[in-house]
Length: 123
Image (tube, rainbow, N blue to C red; front, side):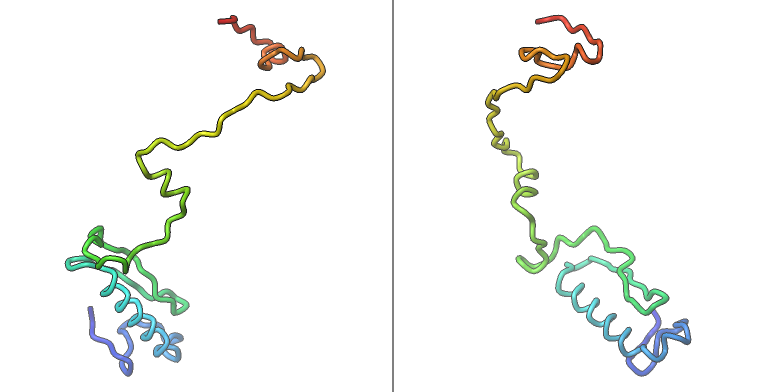
């Protein structure tokens, strides 16, 4: 990585980003500070500057497991936490309710086999 500082911009930076170079430099420093706090030893990051001056993360290494406890935790909803656990989910109990009487269907008909021409055997 070529050397750059607040007073010497990145080599290859477009001319139209030179007036906002201090803002771009500040964004780079914030991203590096976050990565030092969140990433573990051996983790790597590839970042870049877009055409409009935004600093973006292009690639992170898979090894972000060395983070300190509680710093790099994303909030997880209760439903997602239940979906990711191995415990069976509580299912709502279905209670039989009154069946609607539709035209062409008998009230005791459990499905729509008459409407579509399916003749399913009663088992």
